[in-house]
Image 1 (spheres, rainbow, N blue to C red):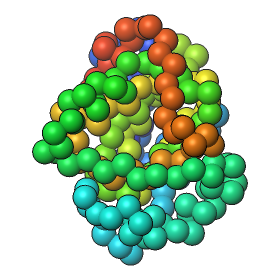
Image 2: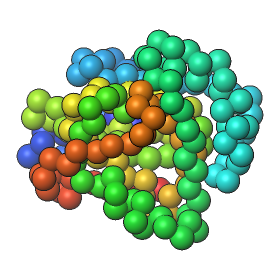
Image 3: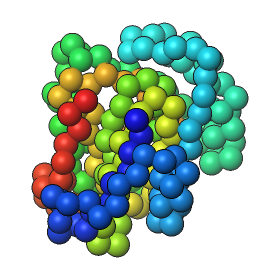
Image 4: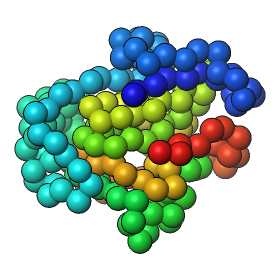
Length: 181
């Protein structure tokens, strides 16, 4: 189940807000310039599925996001718990970083944990199948796919280079909860 927890950035042990309600999640994230949507599909998606089939299952929403957010480049990332490079891939995103452009991700299957560091608070968003999260460019954040990642995500980019992270050098991400699946 999708979840938003909000922490003071110096209190990683106790969230002051927790909600599973999609409308409350969207409202809290909109207040900091981030976006959250729920999509539906009548097709079941699993790690390892053909990327073209994943995109076809969500074609109308994918096309809407590409046009409305001017994000012409789209790809599909799919990880299963037995992926041979899962540890290296997890480590790549665990430290706080920023992007020049928005980071927009849709979870077609599985889950992941995004943490946004904004105005002295950490907004921890557990994204599940059906969730789209849009992190505004320049927002410090990190992502944890867990030690046994199992997800399929559609990623949207303006630049054809795709994911380019600029690390902040902060150790804040190490102090906050991890995604354990």
